[in-house]
Image 1 (spheres, helix red, strand yellow):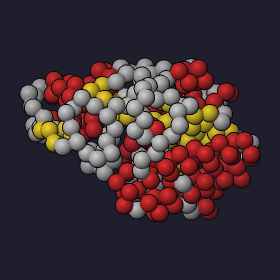
Image 2 (cartoon, rainbow, N blue to C red):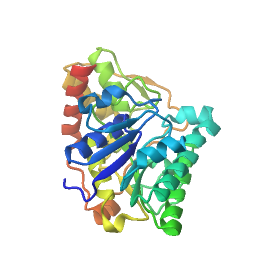
Image 3 (cartoon, helix red, strand yellow):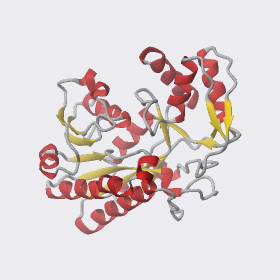
Image 4 (cartoon, rainbow, N blue to C red):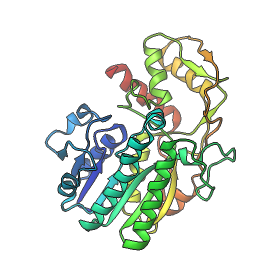
Length: 315
């Protein structure tokens, strides 16, 4: 993809999604700066790009370093966050300092350094347990955790900066992102990375509830594409967009598909449904299609196959 900007900052660029985004930017010939305190990101995620980007190992709340990282950047992709929902429940103030005030710091630094646009990574968690499907951007948010409330507050900050200060902002609400480099040992591991690790170890997956709950799984390369489009689309400024496939996959089907890929025949172990777990999630994708001309290119089956091959070789 040809990019209309020459330099970008990726906050949280050593993380799962961030590292894929850095890779795409470098590949497109963009100068890239990364700021990441490595609380959940890993330098190994960027090892293959060594020497091709500037790296600042620091927290986004360190304004002096953030300003240095932003020097000359036209676009900011803001992915840095505490993404563990249990961690935000346990430490709501500490997580708000990063997810809420940290985002405010990034927006203000971008304004001061005259960046043109900030693309903010939000979450479908803001919809909460509203049973309506698919989830549409005009639904009333119903956050059920500090994490979801913090993402929603950051979305409002982005809108204010867009309307009041004139720095363009675009908000992407991710659904269930999966792909290579997702850490199955982290507290916010995606179910796909956990299931694949179990299958490779010839162990049964644990499914909470009856397994008929559904998720909208979106491959990481498609999420990267959405970010790049949101960084340059004229009519994306000030808007919120779901990033998902519009396809619901049952958790039982997911486990069966992974067993097939691994050549295993393992029955899952069912345990009691967890409090707060959402029964069904599905993205309404019309807004992203209209504003970004975005559609997912990688099917669930193909993405699952690519991801499994990565885990097979990098477990």
